[in-house]
Length: 264
Ligand SMILES: Cc1cc2nc3c(=O)[nH]c(=O)nc-3n(C[C@H](O)[C@H](O)[C@H](O)COP(=O)(O)O)c2cc1C
Image (cartoon, rainbow, N blue to C red; front, side):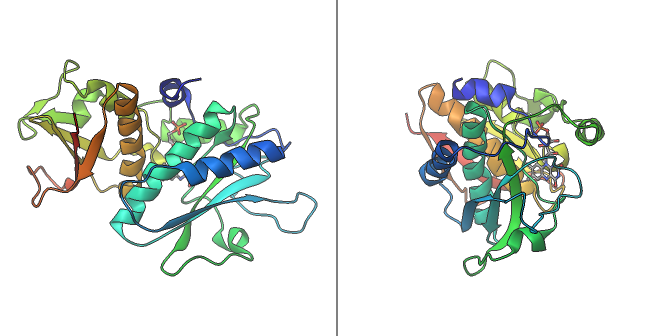
């Protein structure tokens, strides 16, 4: 499965077969964590941890996750850069896992920190903010089906509601040179499926904005930008993320985050 197919078909997985990861899979995922490309700096630490089913250490996800024995636990700094960086970086691991036939689920809210933190120390300024189970998907539990339905997880906002040109006066068209990459951004996962990302394309520059919807909105944008960037790479383009000194245009309460330009 190539990376575009992985972005198109990935979904959050909350029910697992309980078999646990083989040592080879564990090593491959650990390498994926080491190999991530992160253009944003920031501070985060991604760990992969096996939980012994026979042990008395039972991490709680309020029943949301079924039969997972392996989890990523992620410590993240408080600042915007760290949130962007971890979204962009860990999504590369999520997609790699999917290519290996393994499911994951970004989890920011439905877990009890204390159980996952047992015996863990995080670098200065970082706190455990995200976990993700990882393993072979099993049939969706009733709880998972209800969660997906409640969140509208199969739905995404329309292209024309998210991507703009002319200082937000007009929606972007599918003929735009960035349409492919933006279509992939659209499919990215976000907390409560809130899809906070908005984009303004002007003169071949891409300006990323977000609508503040939750404490994870910037992190969500990092995930979307990962899909955008990986698609650019697949289409033979490389580019640079940079920050304009001022927001290129303004709209409502939307916040300017960062911009992108192609190097070619
Ligand atoms: C940053 C982030 C935090 C999330 N937190 C939770 C969570 O606490 N509990 C949960 O069940 N799902 C959580 N999700 C999963 C989203 O609900 C899911 O990505 C969204 O509904 C879209 O569905 P999909 O991933 O299957 O495409 C989170 C996703 C992201 C990106």
